[in-house]
Image (cartoon, rainbow, N blue to C red; front, side):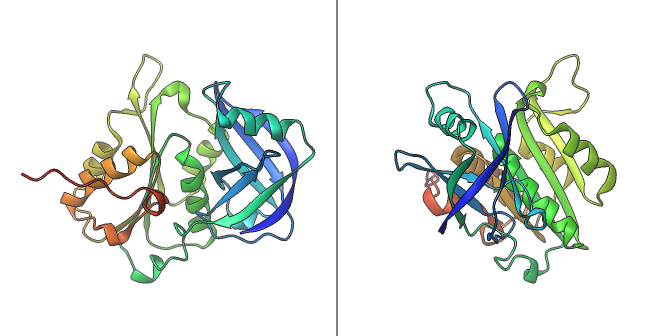
Length: 242
């Protein structure tokens, strides 16, 4: 990863606690699925998935969840808001489209996101469209409630104009939500009960990633065709012996 200067274009609160950050970064190349590090004046380096696709360069988009004013994420957003340019390190991560998955000719690519894991999966989804990928692609995004949905304009355009499917699943429904509800993995298996010829990218918390993989493996998905940044820093928990 190399040090780069990023111009801050916009910082926008797009729902109750998610900020959309747009940056302009010259002299950067990356692969869909990779991340960058925001470098704070303290020397701290905070990773965020790049939420835009490579063909959108020199513009980059980030989605940052700030649920606590005392959090490191709040510190990151305040730093970005108060500066015209910031220092980043990029690119990083091997959970990306050039990791060999496309050469293995999967019949189906699952893109599964929890919360702001949406950013990485959006980049993958947009890049597959740009590359005119001819296989089947299904994007599943899980959120706690309808109020947690963001990037509404992008979602509407994607549903209207792309050849791939896109489903939002919320855990907690209300009278205004007309979409799917329940557990994310159940929605995937309801639509695709046989995953033996599928590959998957999963982005979310450690628990979400391994919990989802545990549910999808019995239906044919193998870990060698499943990709997540979580694998690089959090070893898979041992399953209890029976």
